[in-house]
Amino acid sequence: MKKPILDGIRVLDFGRFIAAPYAGQLLADLGAEVVRVERPKPEPDRLRGPYLEGHSLYFVTLNRNKKSVAFEMFTDAGRRLLDDLIAKTDILISNFSPRAARGLGFTKERLLALNPRLIVLSITAYGPDGPDAERIGFDTLAQARSGAMRCNGEETPYFNHLPYVDFSTAIYGGFGLMAALYERERTGEGQWIDASLMETVSAFVGSYGMIAEAKLLDKPRQRQGNSLIFALGDCLQAKDGDFVIFNVIGNMWPRLCDMIGHHELLEDERFTTDESRYAHRDDILPYIAQWIASLNVPDILAAAEQHRIPFERVSTVGDLAQDAHAAAREMFPTVAQPDVGDIPVSRLGVSLSTHDRAQLDPAPAIGEHTLPVLDDWLGYTPSQFQSLRDEGVIP
Image (cartoon, rainbow, N blue to C red; front, side, top):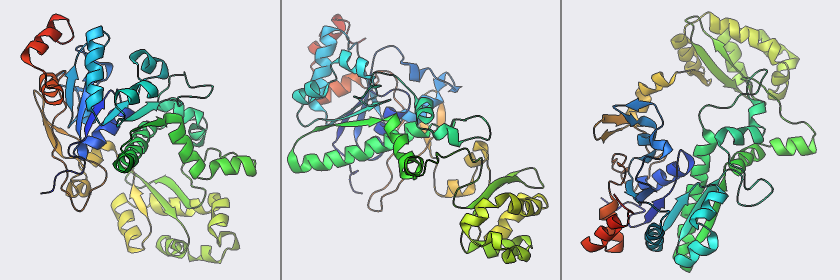
């Protein structure tokens, strides 16, 4: 079996909560040695529920395949140890606020002086400059600032409870890290990668044409419920009480009319294009809703598959946990977490044809790997370990 793609790459992960830890986990899944750096007492993300046997499931699922070193990094000796580790790593990931980063000495100039080959991924809420650079923020605030929340819901804005901005920022950050590693192979130089929650979701909004629409047409996108602007669709209730969602575009329209038994709709000039069907969707949807309400979801999906029209049941997360296709694709393998048992987790969202998927290791206990990492990376001797203990740097 080939070595993992990022075998030999060392990563210091200072991330907390979602965006930065997930970026580190992506690298770990590609074979990098990812070391979570923390203090000896539990960080807030280790204490966040839900819990099983006293362990945070949230923490386990975002920090598997990592190691942990724990020490008091705000002492003089701790800062020296921190600098020594930075000098030996390839990548540093953090999501400190700009103010907190400065307090740790995590500036571009200082870090790249310590290690000119270092690649830094800095994730913030609003970016390192601009009028709002010093503000702290979370996924929900980025959704709100971007206008995305005003496109959700029917009357009042809603945020998406799946923190897609956090996860997407991690993926953008991972994309930047891959590019920076490739560039370092050519130049030997490290660099600083800036990723922010606001810029991530703003890139989505802009790439979907919404900024051009607002600026050039003076038509800011409004809430649309479950309708798309380019396709006929909605979320409707079936006879058995479950819901289905569907989207119909282009040459699917005649097949839809055939499926629901209303061929006369094909003769209506109001419904000849995707744009006109969207404009008159309130006249079309009752026909579809009546058909859906007369059938149970399995029968609806079978008919839709026969007519090659994209319908899907609106599942619960519990349904996904038992989903046969997800099981066949091994989307949720288990990791053996000490003192807890087998925990279902996710895999890297892509697979590479030339490499097997990464082995899954449990999330680390606090400081579980402090001594072996300091030995392997820095060559620390027993007397040096004892000095760190005497100075209160490590337990």
